[in-house]
Image (cartoon, rainbow, N blue to C red):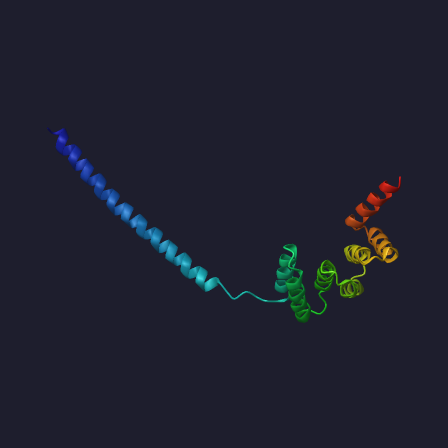
Amino acid sequence: MKSKPMIISFLCCFLAALFVFGFSGALMAQEKAAAKSRTTAQASEPVKRDATYWFNKGALVSTYGNNRAAIQYFQKAIALDPNFSGAYFSQGVSYGQLGQYQKAIAQISRAIKMEPQKGMYYYGRGRVYLLAGDKTKAMADIKKAADLQDEDALNYLDYINRDKK
């Protein structure tokens, strides 16, 4: 009989401890979550809509084929940073995807004027020239890109030279 009250006493103490510590643990978890929520609310600032923001947005929508929207986003990036050669280049690529080759060539040419050492820009313009049917200008740009060690241009030249053999 002595063991029965001892077991009941033990169970009561165990349940009391479980209730107290379990309840206080839940309160601590709630308090921690509330504090985190307050910190997140205080730390969140409005998104900085600078040239990089609009450029990234343009790059994203162009990836999904929405080149009309991409052109508008790249234009916003250019308006905020007129020296952003990547925005001119990407806008040119989007124009090319839409078949607006003269606009594409003009924008990519502006990017090349800003950063003539970027082989990717020459390669991109070369691809637009190919689409526009000007193989002579296309090959000149692609060769220039290869001279600047652009990997895509090197691979393209390797590919077309393999076909000739």
